[in-house]
Length: 264
Image (cartoon, rainbow, N blue to C red; front, side, top):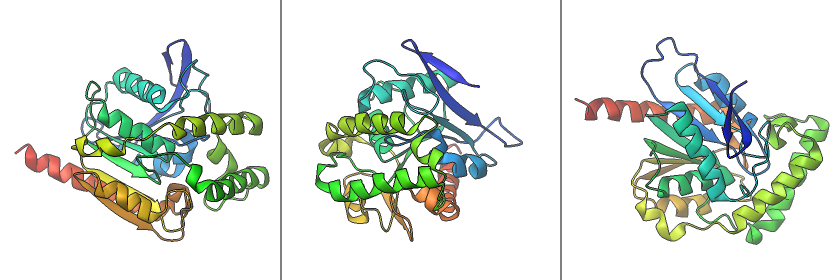
């Protein structure tokens, strides 16, 4: 199994590439959200890896990754992502993130010292991750996650994919740590510095970061577009994977076409 050792911790990741010609083309690097794991991206790993290389890590203390002291904040997670980028020597990649992972993506893009991606994919997230104003919606989401894990009720996902591969106690403890990290994250005033193409995707029934919130996010970014997935809430990539993968595939195809034209 692939691991990277970073600051004394073994950090797990998946790296799937089923393309016939692996010598060129984009790589997708996907970052999971609070309390979850790489398996939240299972549907994307399965389908999109036939056209792109797909890499998805477990952040420290999530999934199969070990705890790294002092890593439970957004910048700590950025350091882990940067270490993985260097470890795999990723050159032409799109950095995507869900919910808290979207905050990691934004913080990464704002750090000009890091190897920069070609573009960003933001899923159900915001530049200000303080969720105190959406506690009722957040409570609903957390309860639903627990119920799905205990009952195996999918709504497009397995419970293990939602909360990670650890036991329920560990998953909820990690979720609490992540929410504390999110509470301290706000890069709204710096969005204009991100001079990269950005594609944002949100579910029409997202109670945490609803479409108007993500629309304000994309309005603050110099080069951004947004798509709303019908009949999805906070995890459109698992609740409507076919539509989600279609949208992402179109975005990546566009990036490749633009890259080909610029190289002529």
